[in-house]
Length: 232
Image (cartoon, rainbow, N blue to C red; front, side, top):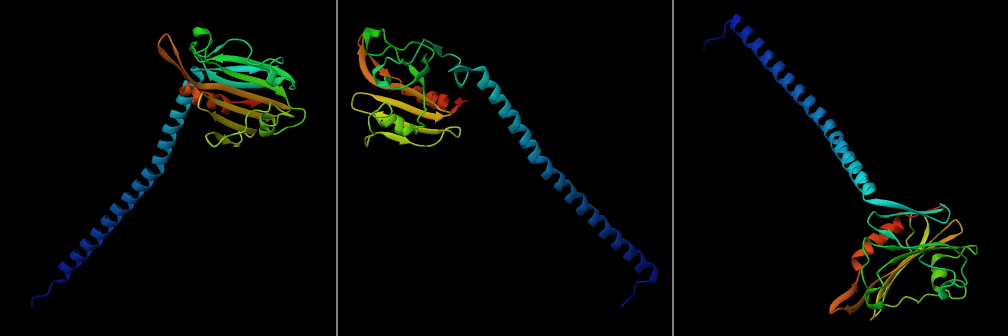
C-alpha cells in the first residue's frame, strides 16, 4: 500500500482543522442570531399589544362621557350618545320613603325608545339613584329587607343573582324575570353610600301594530356603567 508523504499528510491535517473551525463559527453565529430573534420577538409583541391597548383606550374615551353625581362623590362612564333627562328617583317615591336620598339621574340610551305605556310617550330608561348608607347595610340586605332597605322581591328560580364585588366595592346583582317583564338591578355600597342602578329591559307590548319593549341589548352597557363606578 502506498503511504502518504509527510508533506501531504500535513496539508490534510491543516484542512481538517480549518473545516472544524469554520463549522464551529457557523454554529456560533447561528446560535447568536437565534438568541437575538428570540429576545426581540416578545418585545415586538409587547409593543404591538401596548399600541393596541392605547388605541382601544383612546377609542373608548372618545365614545364615552363621564357622569358625576352627589357633589362629585359618585362617578361613572356611559356611551357619549346617552342623554341625561333629569332625576331617576326622588325621596317621595314610595319605595324610597325610608331612605336618605342624595342624588339621582335618568338616562336614555341614545334615543327615546317607546315602551307600551302612555301610547308611546314613555320611554326606556336607566335610573341611577344614590342614598346614604349610615347603617352600613350590605347591598343584599338593603335590596331585599323591607324593614331596613327597599324590600325588593326575593329572587325566584328563574332569576339570576350575583354577589361579586365591583371595583372592590360590595355589590349585589339581581336580574328579575317574570312572565310579564325583566329587570336588572345593581346595588353597590361604599363610603356610606348606596348606588342603585335599575332598568326594565324587557316588557313586550304593541304600539301602532308594532312590537315594543325589548331593550335587552342594552344590558351589557348597563353592566359596563356599573363596572366603571367610582365612589368617594
